[in-house]
Length: 136
Length: 158
Image (cartoon, rainbow over all chains, first blue to last red; front, side, top):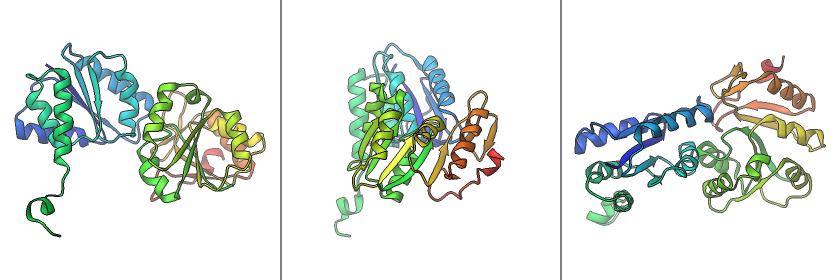
């Protein structure tokens, strides 16, 4: 199974996992969140992410789901991901990305899952009033 | 030379800087001053990616940064970021004129036993640098993002 580490500013990632599990069902394993607080040193952020990597390494692949491009979670995860075969660092986390990851990570191959998460995440960003009803 | 802020932040370019300070200061250029990062290709690439569109980025070792900032860098509003106090003290000793210094993030590591607010931890060495910088007539303020209240740093060097 492809494993997932969600890394975010504050507790956003932990709640995102809880919310996504509410939609597609509880995940017994293969997912972890790391919450980054303003108080943590870069060193301790790195230690937490390294500990999560030790738990979550999988032959099938490891996906880092990150909240914002250019933030500390990305800045820490990206260099660490270089030494992990079959890994991806996906920024812009939203709930559709995570439900899609949970739903397809046992059946899709690594590249397919990465593309599926990106597609579903992008589709989720829309202004539906104009799209579905029209006008402002 | 419109340098709009000198900031010490061990995370350098990250969310607070990109989303809060750059728009607040109307920064058009970021200068990262660090020997270590200037020599690290991966971290340079990450910083370039993290820099907002339309903002120029220069990553310079301390010597070069001093020459660049002390010259006439042009009309752009410049935000100068340093990972620690040493580079700042070096540039001030070389004669770089600085009015004020923002301390944004100096996170905890072993020996940094003096803490102020939630993101400033100082070692004895840091306090000596702050004393030197303040003694050079530089105003010090501790502030994570523009909407935070400034933290008084004078007790750290008393």
